[in-house]
Length: 238
Image (cartoon, rainbow, N blue to C red; front, side):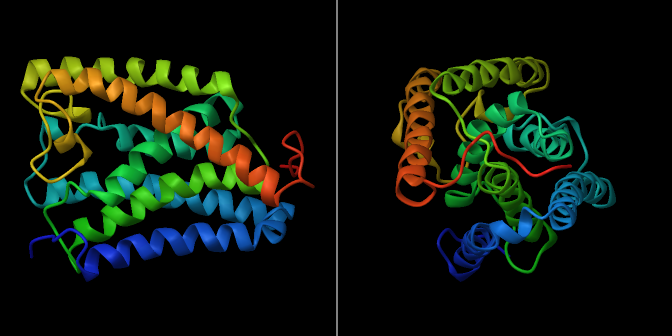
């Protein structure tokens, strides 16, 4: 079955992501209780790791495994880093996953590079995995009260370039298209609005800066409007 952008199947996947975030925000006080906190964090870790492992198993079972299956897509790397973040609650990791994880996963959810639809495995994997990436950073922001800083925007963008190195090398050696560095995706995406390769890579630099600054601004606005009583340096015990 072919995936159709903004069909009922697409809207269902988006709705699941929205509901997940809304539930997390609505029950943030409950999720700050140590027992509930551990259950939620470890549960998200299981989902993130389970998504990547199940995808690799699916590749093998369907004879689709190859170099293109290596975890060098941005969201594949963010799945592993988000799982590590939830286990360690490391603030440096948070800076990376907050900006790169949410930015990459949100773009993927809005313009999926997907060749399967409901009720195929790849459909469920795609929306669950990308929702979990967003949920991990939202959890640290809303539940644990972590906050990005202005300078963390540029540190995250620096890490984006570091993560692009193995992707670019693999693309050159194998003809793959990790992180869409070698060519635009076959499906509709924000890249369609940009110049042809390789010039869109330069334009993406500016797009990434704007999006990350916008995310930082949204957190500042939300704090002023709704979370005045919460302090970023507070967090529940392990």
